[in-house]
Length: 250
Image 1 (tube, one colour):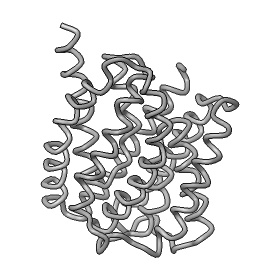
Image 2 (cartoon, one colour):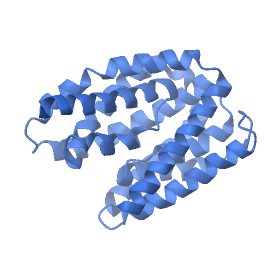
Image 3 (tube, one colour):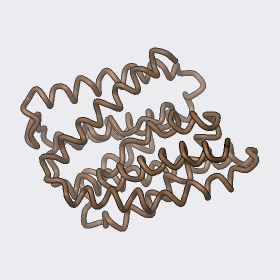
């Protein structure tokens, strides 16, 4: 019964994350540990998901080749990402993660609501490129990704107002998170080395990755650009709500 429950919960979790990654380039990994924790403890959930995130990247990146990456945006975003992750690594034991969740959730919710009130179009609340803003939001994404598994909202708050074509938005997001997931992999592998049966469980859930990415890519190809932006902002509302709930109830 426990094995069936694990496959049902874990498979649904991985399938959903892979689908969103394939369709929108990422940003929904925040649901991974909370959902998978319905079947296993949170530490095992994190150790299970770390290599699966990298596998999802390997499956989704062929759909988003370098031609779909906005390299002029990645250039300042990635140093910010690495700096934010380094800061997160050194402060994770001293920061109240609940406070971070509440702060990021509140800002994200306000950002998304502002877009919907502005007309919910691709050009609504458009902002020009800014290297300092890119470094800042890349750093926030890296920091919150490390300490609260919620790197998606800060990245989206920088990229979405640029009004990028849907393929470029998804490709740039996918490349950004591929780097972040690779950086986080080693610490989680060290943690997972002491957990019995982790390898077998990881392989079981890995079977859901290709299907999720494939479904997500089909969804991406069918969505008009305006609809894709609406879905991305709607996902931000969902993620913001999840962060606020987790932050308040701990």
